[in-house]
Image 1 (tube, rainbow, N blue to C red):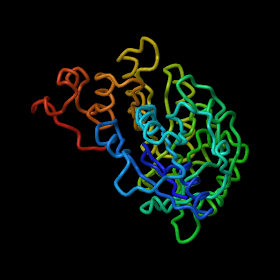
Image 2: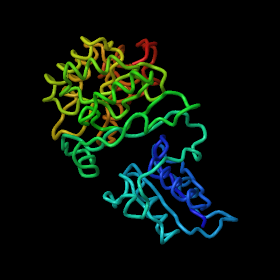
Image 3: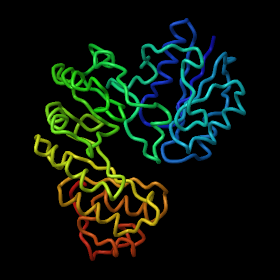
Image 4: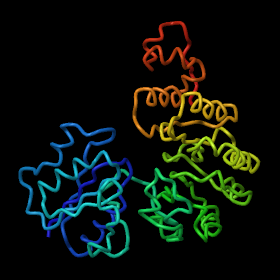
Length: 337
């Protein structure tokens, strides 16, 4: 049987498609994975990429996975082109659809469709202890629970000891101490790329983070990701950040995703208050617009490209959020954010 897999968005290998590929290849099926150019938005090229191609076989099964809501039009078009296609993912209306629902048991991952990928990727836990209204994880995954060990995630030799953990609440897993020990004792580089919740970080958890070789998702820079989503979290967030620093994590290693544009009536001054406090602490603020208005996207660019270190917001806004329109009045920063 010929099987077609559609990877519609996201820069990481798609775990669901990798597991589907392993299942079908294990049954002797021919599997083809196709990726769509859909990094920041859908254009005519993305629609052309999902059209049937000359010489295509008759597909016995077609699967499509979407992470982001922006991919919904592509899923609709795939439904028109391949009426029997099985679609799923966070960006799909069928949020509750699981691989078990389509007859595929939990099993190994097939990395062969992503030949340039060298890291090992997976979950040690699923779910989350919180129910933030902007997040689909509680609806999609339920309560926090342990699901795997480091040995089960790592691809083994000759692959590098580099882990990308997709856990949404690493310290919500009941066996996180064992997972930290496995990471440390196995001399792994690890990216907690979905972030850790600094608001409820204990001294023990902060020390555990400092004890491992934590990295950015490219495995190059030292990086811990966390988030500041609501202005009311200021006290508990900085308590956690201070615990990280006291444990040995440098402030510059901490990247704090700031949800902006979500709170009703949020003002620029409120956003800037968070930015300023994080800069003063020495952490790296990274605004994440809930809605992509020109001002919020302009604020994001101002901060993540470190223009905020040398250019006042009023001047940045007057220049249409573009450094090219500032003239030579301001010197652009030569430092990273």
